[in-house]
Image (tube, rainbow, N blue to C red):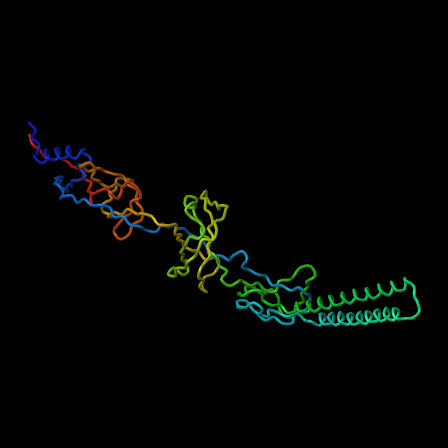
Length: 365
């Protein structure tokens, strides 16, 4: 007759009380020699619930705004008399960038001014002729009076046109001095002193200026998260070049069209950078975190979560008996892990579940 050891009978009774042999073995441990002993008294704990920021983490790129580059050219033709900037120079609005030789432009101003003086003389003569006829004692025909009146009005019109020509010539003369339209940094220079520029059909570009504080952040947000992002949300980012420097930005818009790469759908989220370091440059890669609000997080000790294959689970106390509960975990920090689903704040769980197999061994006849 086969006799079973006393500890084996105790194990069977415990399994029935716990509600199942599989779960009951989870509260036991087995020695390397195949002998089993009852584990220490189980410790039941409650999850810790905290309020924390809900964020979306993604990558992005620092880039120039579409309207941040200004190409400065010449509206008049001529020889470049002086070029006063170089690549990398910082300019302020109104600073002189270049000067065109003004010899021909000065001549046009003088010619327009001379024509104005001639027209003013003719106007004065037309007025005197009309006044002389009007004060004469002899009667004159109506036709003569009308002719003198129209001659005076024609002279007035010629004077007005000549005045416009003078103003236009002076304004064109002013275009010979090319000034910076914005504050910024000179990105490129495409001409040199002594070159002849022709502005007959299109204004030739002299320099390209990048506007100050013209950088923006473009973050690529996955389609599963884009619904949580809205205008005005705060964002933080670091660059690969300066990982220790955290910069801040604000969401300005979400592009309506997506970027699809290898079947992954992302939407560009454009953010205004609040502070710009002089070292930050366009096309730098950024690691972005967008704060989408606050949420409740359920935290448990890491040792409370056990693994069975690809599944993670905890042991809960429900109805007076331990019960295995599959969970979905999130971020880990400070010895705790977030439980996304499977555990509520009202649950009680085993601090350190141990999964083991009971192997009744030994015996006699």
